[in-house]
Image (cartoon, rainbow, N blue to C red; front, side, top):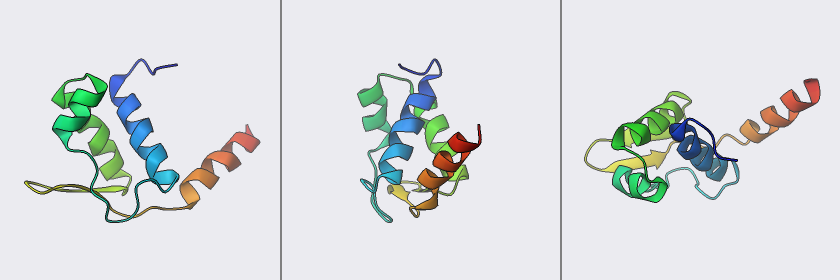
Amino acid sequence: MRNSFLYMNIYDDLRKKIEQGIYMDGDRIASEEELKNKFGVSMITVKKALSMLKEEGLLQRIPGVGTFVKGRNPVIGEEKKILSYQM
């Protein structure tokens, strides 16, 4: 089921790929333009998703160069499992 907030679709997709190790530390992710086209959303929507991931310390954005995985924290996936058991 798609999230009603479009930026969350991008956020979830990228975060999942980081958690699973598809994107590793230092990997460059798709450009904002590529993400915009892939998800069929506005540039503002893409920027919102990337900003959230940056705030979490998962991405580093370098203007004019690209967006890179800052560091994959293997605990991220485990935190979700622990929280699901507590609920």
